[in-house]
Image (cartoon, rainbow, N blue to C red; front, side, top):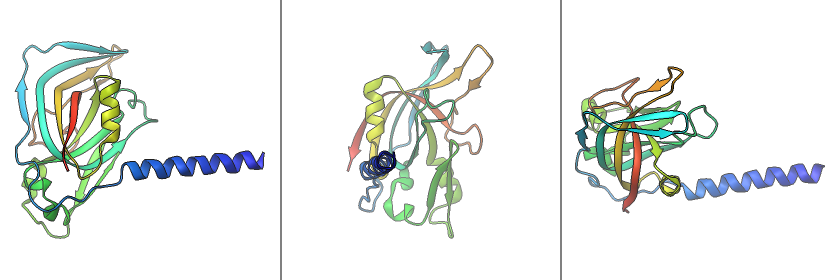
Amino acid sequence: MRKLLIGAVLLLVMVGALSHWRHRPLHPLPGVLAADVPEQVDLDPGTQLQRGDVTLTTRAHFDITARVLSRKDYSWSADADLVPEDLALGWGRMSDTDILAKIDITQSGRFYYWHVNEFPIPRREIETSSANMHMIPADAGVKRELEQVRQGQVVHIEGFLVDASRRDGWHWNTSMTRDDTGAGACELIYVESIGVVAP
């Protein structure tokens, strides 16, 4: 029994080490890596997609090239089946290594947090050039691609901003602007494709 327990612990340690190695951050050279703001084309009316008992209503076509500031995987929460991963993404000067070296970035509880001792760029630029985005993979292939994403990479994502709802009244709505902050400011993205642009 003791040997089995030790073996199980060692296996967990090895799996954790492998996951950490696969997702280790990259450190690109300084400079703006993703200059363009996200592109959004609002849809009225949208269409509905079904994911189990969740109805997704498309609100806008969404196209973004951005640097991954942080990633957070969710496997045990109630909404993990729908949204297994969040990406904190930055564009413009929020994709520059020199700027990001002066900003502490974390993710927790479906939120993205940042802290500075001294602002390297104006506060409002940080707020409007970065966002926490909830990823809904369109299929198993997209889910696998999302699982490979590493902090520091520049990724290109295409899909739809969506609102999610169930018949019991539960709902989760997407942000429709990059100008908001706080609760409700995250984008809920139905990801049809994702690819690494650099490095």
